[in-house]
Amino acid sequence: MLKDVPLAPGFSIRTLAEQADGLSGSDLKELCRNAAMRPMREFLREAGGDLEKLEQSQKEGFTLRPVTLDDFFKLDGSSALPNE
Image (cartoon, rainbow, N blue to C red; front, side):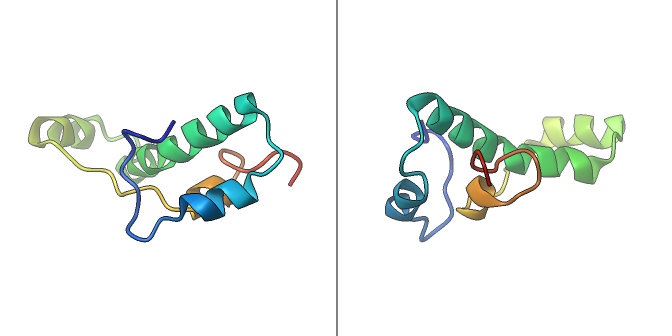
């Protein structure tokens, strides 16, 4: 699920697996999808709806920050484990 997602140096798949123990396949898929989208959501928030900035970034190309373990477990309503 994370094969094409840039991960932060030192990212521990083992820690992720331990923290996600007991989740269903569907839950894992959603957890990974949400975590992978967090850097994009941050980028869009920083742009603040400025279409010119977004268009310029698209023309210049941009790189999103790598995904961290926090992206999976931060409680912000978008990437948290169920029931936490």
